[in-house]
Image (cartoon, rainbow, N blue to C red; front, side, top):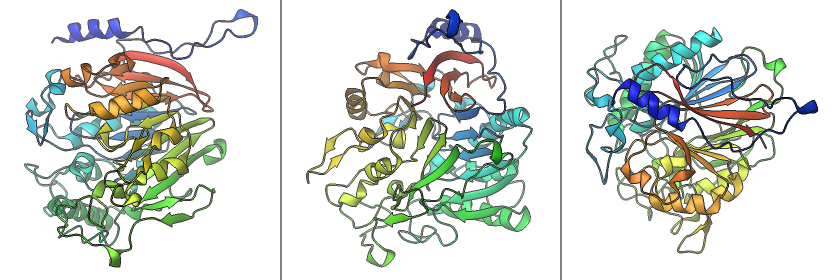
Length: 456
């Protein structure tokens, strides 16, 4: 499909149903409308705005944030470089019929993400990624190593997506769930099913600690001071990043850095085969250990839950860490779909065999749900039906769609898809717009505009 054809399609999509029509101002003044123009690049971020960029690579999940004062943060770096075709029990053929980066010679998700971020850095004047968070150790969140070239910095590691980000961009602080021991729920460097990519990532981290001054910390559940505004905090006292959960430690919701340990202690872990953790093992699966955070700006709230899930809660109720984290968070405006919207996630009132109710979304109750899709089954139909059935006023945005998703009932609930999804929160946090931007052409042209939404 040519660029002109794609632009024509985008223009046809411009008439996004306005989710909330602003009331006329005093004296009948014209309601505020988005300053963006379909077909043109997204305008530059300006101080006071809060940007959330869901960067699409069709290889996993990646979220870049620009805080109101220009502090910058990256959450995950997609990089499951699966070729187009079968991927386990699903495929990615349909979603890549529009754009297939794997057919581009030399494509690497890490480089693509870094290029996107550097363009945004021209807006902020900040050349540093102040924070990077690796929510958990799966390749679609921090990259794989198969076929990757050796780093230009050191022969001790290859250009795994997160490792390449560290090579290409100055980073202030890196956080993950394992530093410095990486031993929960077992030795991740030797016993995990993906121990090779964990070791490569750690080799890159250690090299940068020794050679570039990188700071590394374990993500702390409950903390409200681990991620803060770095450039002009005094100007935005109502902005906060709250760490909700990690490794089963879940914030108590009381505003202090306290968290409850809900997972078994290391000495109590029982697993037959660490490389294949089952729902019957007294051991969390990697997704259960995801770092979860909530970002608040005035009335606006964002929930980023990594691959939070409730899989296995019929055997061990604590495995529904998703509902516990959602309860601690409370209502939000925008939610990144947990674990790409696969089965056993985004709890919508699912009743487990033991009677436990998995109902994360009844606590979060988002207005907008953003799905980072990298296979044809993101989100799964059962999850889609449950979520849309529960939340009648929900608007959905999906980075990639194909024939599978388009066949779901109520697909009209998708207000934007097939590109980068950007949420831009206005100064003060009272309202926000959601934009779809072009991804294949590297121009970030506005394809669709939705809003304004009123923050709650």
